[in-house]
Image (cartoon, rainbow, N blue to C red; front, side):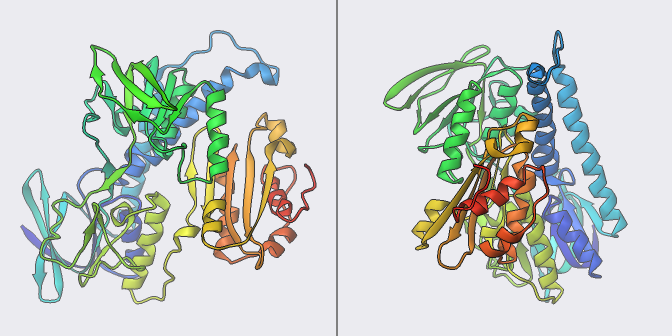
Length: 469
């Protein structure tokens, strides 16, 4: 094995790891990246990006079946599932290749293999790199960033089998469209798959053990989403308890208790979307000061683990489990290592987005959490039915909700459901990051006609000044 010295080694090439490596190289650090599978990580290869390609296809399928609303007609509308899946894989492949180009451009040394801490050499960390159990290299570095991400949580009795019970991986590459589908879990991943398959024509049932779907979102937004999905033909069971699963030759049966009733369900396929667990195994953490809590590495505000020279970012370091959080942490962590003054990330300023139909986006405190925190609040609401662009687009279903501190005018939170809200939420994120108040937001000029005008109206509505409702 060769021994190579670096200023920094990043273990994991997902949206946190590869961004951290690029930023480190930009700052003049001799940097290496170790990745065991595909550059871009789960997000780019099996998560954020390919699912958006699939969801785009499902939106087109929905639109093609509603052309009459716009004065068009088309006969024999159909889709080729294999071409839909192939395009999503091509999109992922293109971007993964792009990450490789960026790393090469920035002169980051890339090692194909599994990286693990392997002791110390004086003040430097040692890492072993192996591939299929065989040694590839031993790396030495002043600092190490662990960015190994997370994987789907598997519940007993719901182990993915590649045929009847799917994880997100199988759900992204179906060989045939199931006529019926059960989605277990109603977080962002579960709801996005439910939305894709429903828009493609499958009968979809969503079960959630908690009392509402999308439980991290504002309760009012969750209720509107529930209503919209039921209107689309989904069956949603909350406060649910699952009975044992029985597998048939080409279907799955089980009983679900919800709402005081027992529902006998038989479906072609089941998607398990019940959370994630951190990839902490075999990283060489034994004998270090790194602390693991419920499969995630504990870190401080600057991603330091407590073990000298060892940092952790992204999904490995705990919630929120979002690619943009991982990337931002990667940059912040590297800049801290380089001696730059950095500002720790405020989790409440990290937006959350769910790319279902209708889309959902939020930042900051929900109304309930704001009240629990002791704030006296002013709440503004503006429905898309009062927005000209939304009506013109045929997308009148939606709401923007703002939560302000009644005494200071601080924007405590913003919550949105409707077309393109995942593109709009950043306006409120900037407002929170810049510590703007209602005064500045009221005076902001929004372009007309745009859906974003609903954001302005929701601010005005919090102070009884909405103009178009």
